Each structure stands twice: as structure tokens, then as C-alpha cells.
Image (cartoon, rainbow, N blue to C red):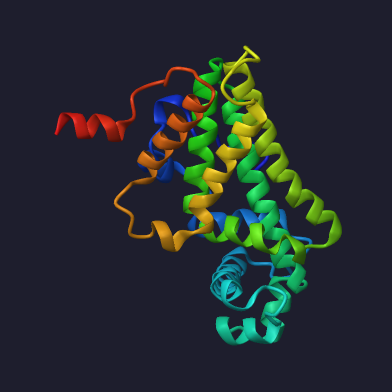
Length: 252
């Protein structure tokens, strides 16, 4: 969200713990960046007060909307949940729509930086791994943001709805491009576009069903391994490396 990309994931850093340690879009740092990007919508002039209010607003929104839906949530509901007065809400967000627009902006920027990190790789297999792991790791750390955007795109103003849909189209396009590079033979097991769509569904599965994976024995790194394994097998190419989960079982 800054003028300079953060470089979220590097080939030597393809594990969740390292990604989480260096991920800029969490805690107060995230809300400071939101404040910097939305000064035209935020009337609070002092950053520390704006960050505090924004955190309350988004935390409350993400708790309420899965239960009642964003369209049904009123600013009065938000005022009660956050403890902020109506004046305090309006000074932090110009309207309820602003919340949805900011969510779209945040997810868009994070995904764009993952794509940029992937495009910097020379090897298409490494680029694909950076892309898959980047999407999975970021959407795990920012699960409420990705979840909200998926289900509440209809709540955005029309222009922003199109921007939200474009995020998914870009994801499929990037996956398709890399998978196509790995399968130059048109006789491959499955078409690249189909496999790309399947891969995105696997990524979305993880953040759209947090209840399913909350207490899962399988780590997000192992889930990423399995996603990559499925992709390689679907396009009939050798794996980059044996699945870590398989290695653990064989060595036990």
C-alpha cells in the first residue's frame, strides 16, 4: 500500500512463519497504511487516534457481517459495537460504503504485491510456488478481509465492484500464465485455464471456511504443499520437490 512494494515472499522464504514475521499488513501498521491512503475520507487528523478508531471499526465489522451481512449492518450497530459515537464514526469513515471500499483496496494491493514478487522469478515453477504460497499465507493472515470481499462485493459501489471482480480475474490469469509455461505441450492432462481455476478454488477454500481449518492438524505449509502437488499432477509434470508431509511420514 506504500509507493514502494513490500516484497512479501522470496524463494528462500517459502514458509509461513517467515512470511508472517515480515508481513507488513497486520496490526497497527496496516491501519497506519490505510490512514495514509485514505486521508480524503478520514477527518481525524492525528494518526494515532485514527488508527485506534479504524481498528475498532474493522474488527467490529468483521465480527458482525458474517452473522447479519454488511448491507443489514447499520452505523448505529457499528457505534454500539465499537463504543464510538456517531460523530466519531463519521470522522473516521465518511460513509458505510467507505468500509467496503477500503477492504477492496487493501486486498487489491496485497494481491498485486504477491503477483509482483512472482513475476520477479526467472523459473516458472518457483514463480508459481511464490504465487500459491503468497496467496495462501496472506489470506490466512488477513482472513476476515478476504472473506468479506468475497461475500460483500455486491455491497460496493459499481466501479469498485468491477475492481473487486478484477482481483479474481487477475489471479486466474497469473496462475494460467505460469501453468501454461509449465505445460507447453497442448496434450497435457488438463488445460491450463482449468487447472488455474482449480488452484484458485483451493486457495479460496482455506479462507472461506475458517471453521473447517481452525483446529486442523495440517499446517498451512502442508496445505500449500498439497495444492502444488495437485497442480503438478494435473498438468502431468514432476513435482518441484517431494511433499513435506510425505517426507515426514516416510521418515517416521
